[in-house]
Image (cartoon, rainbow, N blue to C red; front, top):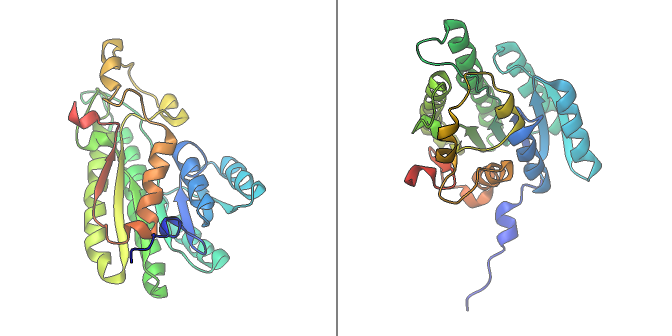
Length: 262
């Protein structure tokens, strides 16, 4: 006799604790909302602490559990302190989602070393530090874990000028993802990356850089006919941190509306 599958249990995060860097707005905020909706306790970690407080409060007001933490992912002492503080508050650490990032644009021939270093420190050094520290806790607790890095479709295929530093940092993040997955697999910790295509966020709109040629705008619309929504990315993250994805690690999941098949 064939029985039905309890599909809801495959996405149930009840009793789990998650850290989301860059969780105060945009993709990060939506990911916090999705994880909390699945039952996880969520640490909203962001350099913009007042906004992180707002996100945590909104989740708590509708019956979820969330706390805000001030975090500049470039700063090693802060990363160490926040990971330990989350472990103390929630009693465990099961999930890390690295969303914090910057997309400042500058053309290859004009980009300064200062901007190059700033982008790599946030987009690559930051995830390295958070993965290292979260993995220490997960290994010590012998509880396994799920780590997801938000990379970019641009790490595989650039689509407009000015993102050389950003795309290079995200390519490095893909390599970090695969190597961390290899080393942490023996501890039952999976590490994957989500590579969003052109997804509309307030942070994207604020990013400084040279204007985009209007003639290129139609090329930014993928075959599915629209730009991405933050919920598209949050859904992919929820899958990768859920029991449904327990045998997936070291993967880079492109979520781009089909842009790479154009």
